[in-house]
Image (cartoon, rainbow, N blue to C red; front, side, top):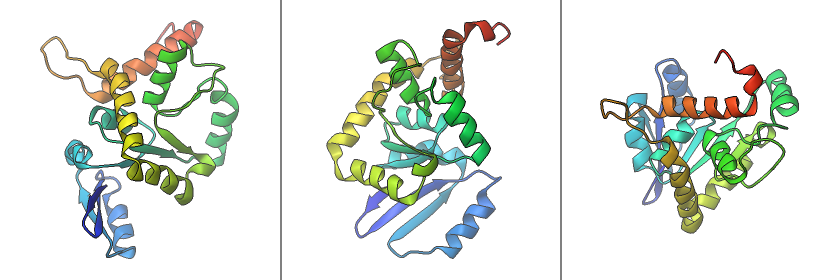
Length: 197
């Protein structure tokens, strides 16, 4: 989002598969204090750079926002079965849901398992994926410029390992870099299961 005098501008990239649903929700929830600009996903990088804060799902977008130096809050909610699997199987081993947090954790501790530590990006997961916790995390970054600057600086350190050029000198897509980084960590953590990856 971008703060303007008297109003809040929300830049909302929406892909073709969800655009109609997003437009329907926006029509039924008009608010004069909030100006929503619906963008094509191709315009998302420009929107990231123009924003003072991003509310994002957990995924490649967290890496893209880190590379754009945009402060962010991540959120994710799942159905009850996925929630159960993640909580019981993955969370004891994988301490975070966003790749920048995982990479920062690994850089600090050299392992993913068994150590809990503070996250760079606030992750509002499961029951915390609600208006109250998300608004609290967002307001913390909006009202404290120092906190937002600390997050951007920490993400910049992590993002250095995610910036690369291919043999032709072109930038490698953040999604490709994120997938490669995640694969490296999975191979280190579960080498016996990664023979065919």
